[in-house]
Image (tube, rainbow, N blue to C red; front, side):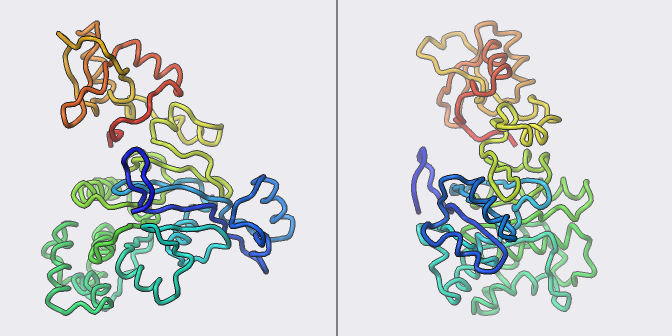
Length: 361
């Protein structure tokens, strides 16, 4: 399933992808496959020739089972890149590798099959067919696959239950609230049991309360299905709730990639710092982020789980001056958390050790 990194499989790779609008845009890449020596110099050269650079040298990996969030301000190129991943927008240069196969080498017919069987896509506009009821909207992609009626309705019923729409099967889109319509869109994309799930601002049209409920629902579904997900948003709080890792974009380029805690504690520049400045560290740091490996004795030490939030951890540390042992889900001790370690992590973001477990949602 692609390359490995720390035991994790790479599901999808985006490699040196460019999207340039204008005549003969591929002429800027006659001798190279999206790789350039000086990125800013190459971008300036393209802009000077009256072309528009939507994506510039974008590279990232999406691991199996992770939520990879891409965020940035409006016009930063995030929606373009997610459309390049599915080739709804044709990249100008670069490679997009899904399960070890380059999507840019696929024929139109092969692409249709990949989208029908391997990709789920959800966009901000729900895109429901008004003349079809809920179950027929959800079963529609299965009909395109040629699955017989009984089987496609059975599959549609399964995802209807998953997204909490039982009892609404016969309703038409105009009889549903915005949140319910979005659930139908999510269910429809899940009905094909995609290998990779692409979501472009799926909740941004919803009011704040429903949006939070949909985020909760999304995390619940993901905890069951463990899909590989690319999720686009312009909302840092939403990214913080959902992301295993995230990429921040500006002017079509990737500025920084990392776990939310890495970006908050160690932003690479003022642009990233602006996104993260209002986030309280207590909401993202957990015990696994501040523990230090030890070969010493753990005798007499209390134990906390790896995902214990810092505010709770500080309560334990107040009663345990020598620190507490931090345990992974399988009972393995990751290290010892101490008050000094917490202070060191906050004082210097780069001192936070690499992730040992997933950051708490």
